[in-house]
Amino acid sequence: MILANYLVGSLPFGLIITKLFQGIDPRKKGSGNIGATNVLRVAGKKAAVATLFFDLCKGLPLIIVSRQSGFGDRITLLVGLAAILGHIFSVFLKFKGGKGVASSFGVILILAPQVALVGLLLWGGGVFFGKYSSVGALTAFGALPLLTFFFNLGTDFVIFSCLITFLIYFRHWGNIRRLLEGTEGKI
Image 1 (cartoon, rainbow, N blue to C red):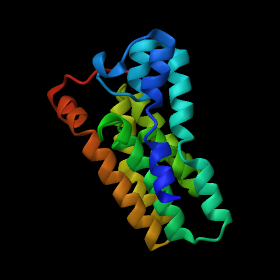
Image 2 (image 1 turned 30 degrees about the horizontal axis):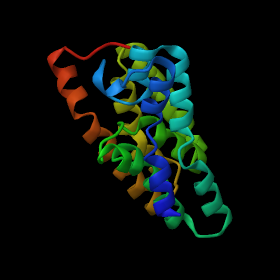
Image 3 (image 1 turned 90 degrees about the vertical axis):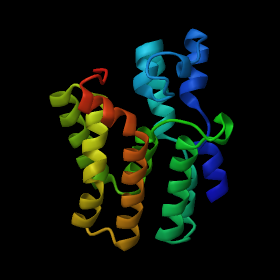
């Protein structure tokens, strides 16, 4: 299930949808990312909403199956992490991919909805006040380990959330640099 979820996570929906909607490759326009924010810039709202939906749903069926099959929290967290790693390091894109925000949010939504709700509020506040999608993501995922600790989700979930936060910040390194330089594109 871990390998299968990695493969599902590797499906580059932003690329597929942008090519279907506009016939273009989002990696060659805008920020060059395959995520919903860049798809919005290069292909419009409908393509961005479709990308966001499919990226949110990456791997969710296998996470649910893992949970209901009684594999335990640790295995279920690994199944979820596999989908996120697939999105970020897609086997179909030579181990390049998106930044992992929507796929991570989808995994957290199914595993800990209360954490996802607070994270969504933090993301919205970051975007509203900062006017940058990256500020919203960095705010929400920066708080993720603290939220999992606050909601007493256990050591495995705290470690899982730290890994996700590291991956999100790692993939947003260029955004962080542009924010500090004042050159980051607003949403």
